[in-house]
Image (tube, rainbow, N blue to C red; front, side, top):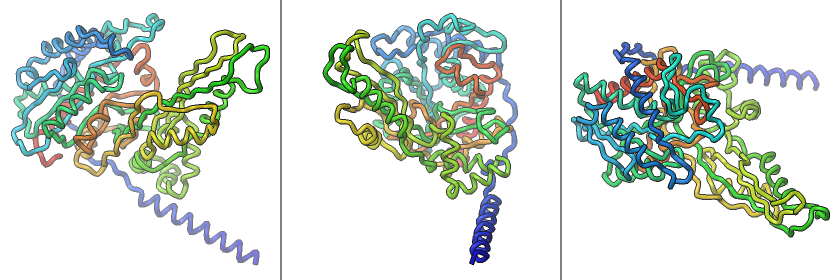
Length: 492
């Protein structure tokens, strides 16, 4: 009996091993072979100088919208008009809601759906007290040591200026697009895009404009950030997470701290927060993260390739490994982040009111409603009320990777950065692209910046900068993308 059992186990293990190996062998690369594009005669120093000048204009978005400086945004408009004369002589420019901009480059084929390339002109403020941390003043636009320094060099004036550089160059070459090209530049992305991108999208919808695809910021070319991958990876966002902040309030009788009850409002609220942190929403390996590993897995060493080729059978192992890192954990679940806490007026007074805010970034497949139900079920304490702090945003729809638009982006990236592989991904933050879901199903999020680990801390942080060579690549990518997209319709 024991021999039969042992033989059965051995045969089962052998069958599983053969299954794993067979599936790994069938797990083929999804990279496309291309011929590298010829280098473009773009003047790197001139590119850098124009971006540096744009950085010097402090187009800051404040949480208090009343603090917006209209003169800065209008000065930015004038700067673009001055430094991109062919664009402004050829394309139609419209101011949307005063401060956002929509450019139209008409195509010769009115029946061909347009493409829409978007970016944002606004930047985040400098955190008070960190000014001295900057090696170059944050709005100096200094060009030093091979870098352009200042707020917006990475997020997101490199995209605004890079797109205009591409169109300006193509106009010098006498290019007339077959399909219409739209450029949309919002002015308040850093505070949600309600007054900028949302209004541009509404205007386009009112005109029955349905772009073939939208391209926005969101992901980049990363190096040294993905275990098992030694070459650069161009990550193209095919979806982004939703956003919901939940306010928690605990109330009880106050009093003197010398005679505290068994549980104070602070303790009740702390227990609620602890419960949420220790009972996270469930992981989900389907959706964008699974698609990403379908592209990345075949490029990994054999052992890791076998794991991802059999991801459905090894889901618990994969979830455990991915959950161990904050970066990868964010790609497989709705994340829970307590961010604000307020209680008490004096050290010897029991507070009758304690308040906290917990921020959730919602994975596609979850919803604001399911997050709120999770919060209430986990806390399970009638002394704590939970309600949305403000209107959030739902996760975006997932854009297809088998579309001509994704193939176009993959082809262009491979042509301009031949050493990189390409994979779809999930944007864990928010972008202006969320506002365009009503006019197209093809929304992709990729800014062709080359980023390493230390660069990520500079976005919204101190010492934001971009290498001149890096910015030249941005302009070259956009130029090649437009060459591919507008010269022959069949390429899309």
